[in-house]
Image 1 (cartoon, rainbow, N blue to C red):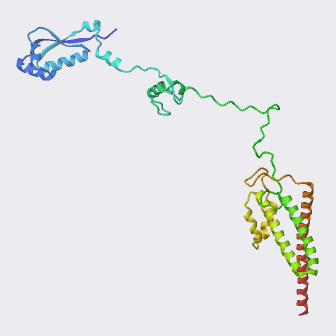
Image 2 (cartoon, one colour):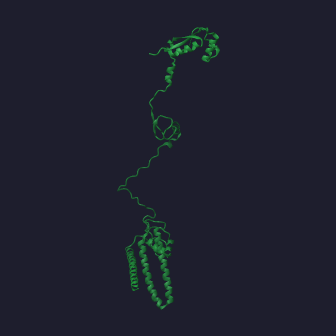
Image 3 (cartoon, helix red, strand yellow):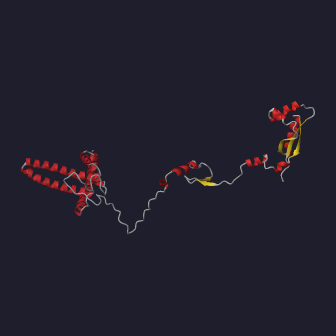
Length: 329
């Protein structure tokens, strides 16, 4: 049941001791209205100057009007309960937004889940503008791109996928008397040993010729030395090419101290299995190449071992002589 409402009624009566002009001036100031509208309240009978009030509010209005000199009264406002006009309390209640359950939404750009809003909290896009741009975009540009087909697992029936490039499976041509091409470590050892044997044989023949003619022997000796150096350089350059290095580095073999280390590098560093900028890889080593290279390694290791032992023996001899000198003194 709704609470009883009241109205303030004024019929133009004045409080005792109040003049008409004074009351009109007070009401004009109270209602902040012009004098003409205040004059209309007098001489026209009862007028409801305020409706739909609670009892406390009605008493407050009466006190204010009576102090202003107007004799007003409060009466029950029966029309307020039947009126379709909303009261102040009802309007205030409707002015407060009803607590509605928050609905969630998904951002059309980044798919972020959040309460319904005009802006995405994750990517910051204005949703309405983004949807407008998407609607203006041609249909072809919004079609999803087809993802690449997943790679199939290899099966015994799959075709081979070996490298079939122009140099796949090719091997270089062996050229002993050339600065072009590539040779591996074993062939480098074998050719070096063969060159050494040939040079020793030539020196033996030149020595015999020198006994008969020193001039001819000197000429042949110079030719043999130059020929050996040229062929040795060609073999060394091809070994460097196999390592992927420039052939000009072979000149380090004539530099003191460096040459004692660089030839070991040429024997140790392998070349790539495939082609490099100097051509395809050399052909596989034959059985003869492996045997000659093995002999060279045995001779080399044996020579180094004998050099070490001879040096150790020399040290022992010199140590004994030095001890005898000390004892003799």
